[in-house]
Image 1: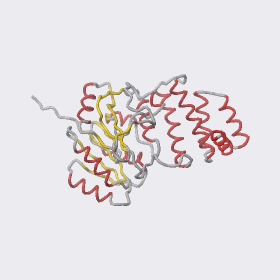
Image 2 (image 1 turned 90 degrees about the vertical axis):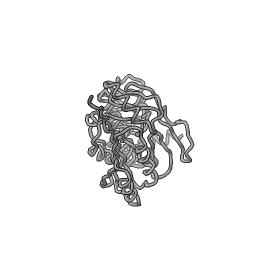
Image 3 (image 1 turned 90 degrees about the horizontal axis):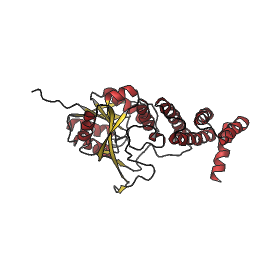
Image 4 (image 1 turned 60 degrees about the vertical axis):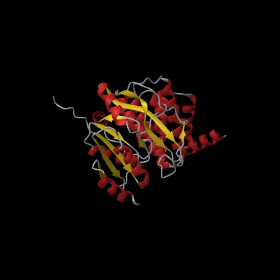
Length: 317
């Protein structure tokens, strides 16, 4: 009999100035009960001792290799790793998160048993900065769904470490966008636009750790650079949902339209007039309302910045 060869799982870990947590993230991959695996560390031009740690990890573990790229954020780093991956399955892992030991074993098995599915996922456990397990109160996490849409229009209810993708799905979805905020949400919605079906594993497969060590998700909501990425991500997500066939009447799409309108007002106040115009137009095409029409008229008369600032003042009041 011909022996069965298990398919390779490629894990892509982008990192920037995070040596200690990187060690732990890599250790969680090396400790997998499943083999074979490869670990591709993408150094996003770290300026501290992270490159030395990467060298140590590669010397100690034959599964680990690395590349270094010009600083471009997590999306660009993940895509650089994707282009280097040789596996049949792709795991994206942020350098501050962890995989549970049986993750690959359970999720590869789920995808092999359900060939119609392109992504396998399970339960994510959340911990605070002190390591205490916490409930995820900021979104409805750990849902059980057969498809990404329409629920992802409300929130990205898993974390980057949660899913395991077939490489064929990643290839069909195309490159990660070079954004530094909400690039992961946009990417998964692009996967959802392909009609990708999900395989659920009823087990904790990953840990998401909260901390204050250089997280890109932290920052001012009024920062123009962050708002520009948020606007672009939301604009793309709306187009992905339409490609997936989500009806504009769906409650999730209606709620997303209100979020588009909210970000449009923030963009206007920050001086991002073009982004504000596009988002209001998209929101109006999904869920037209009197307040959107009034806001558009006010913006044409007084300017998008003044209209946005006035709207922010009214919201605070």
